[in-house]
Image 1 (cartoon, rainbow, N blue to C red):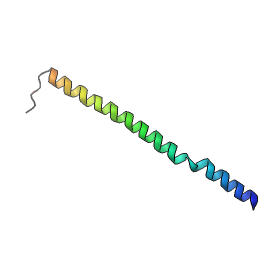
Image 2 (cartoon, rainbow, N blue to C red):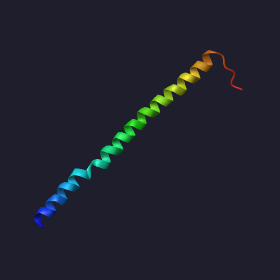
Image 3 (cartoon, helix red, strand yellow):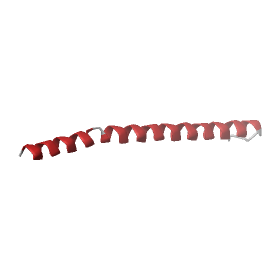
Image 4 (spheres, one colour):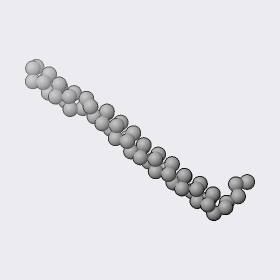
Length: 56
């Protein structure tokens, strides 16, 4: 019984922080993706202003 509890504790410790790491990596990737998309939109807007696009 003691070995079973020890295996259970090792299993729980191994996966305790897994969710935190996955969520942290996801948000970090999402933040970089958002920054890249923002700068693409900013570049497109400045390009349209520079070329004289009519915003009607």
